[in-house]
Image 1 (cartoon, rainbow, N blue to C red):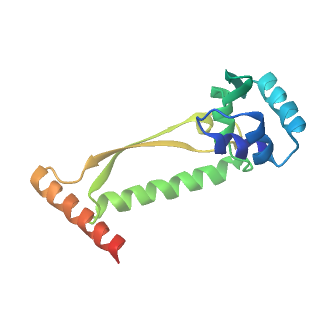
Image 2: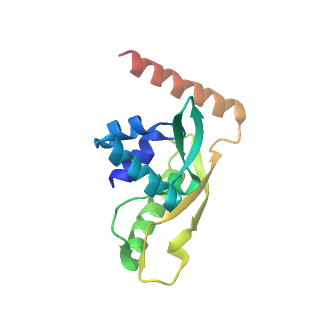
Length: 155
């Protein structure tokens, strides 16, 4: 969990051992050992050297680890209920003219599509479409929403 949080914090930037030590709250030597382990695991890679100060960056695998959740896998039945609840919300949104967009398409992918009893998560992609075919009406409503947000920010 600590390593995942560290990799999230560094983002796409380059960093040195001193930064890792401060962020991980460990001595510099221990941070160097952690970095070596992360390089061996493929989560971190050398970026460059600035006058002897080695710099590192998160690898693609490190980016994946940074986004990983520590949540327990879902039982198939729980996942099916959650997906059904989500789709019910999609239908409510599509029936309500309050929203500027409607959900045109929902795509489920990833471990949900396997036959296993426990899945890691429910991966969902959505495609939105303008609710109003009249582009002038849609633009006027978008502008009205933006002006309301501006007023809310000023208050």
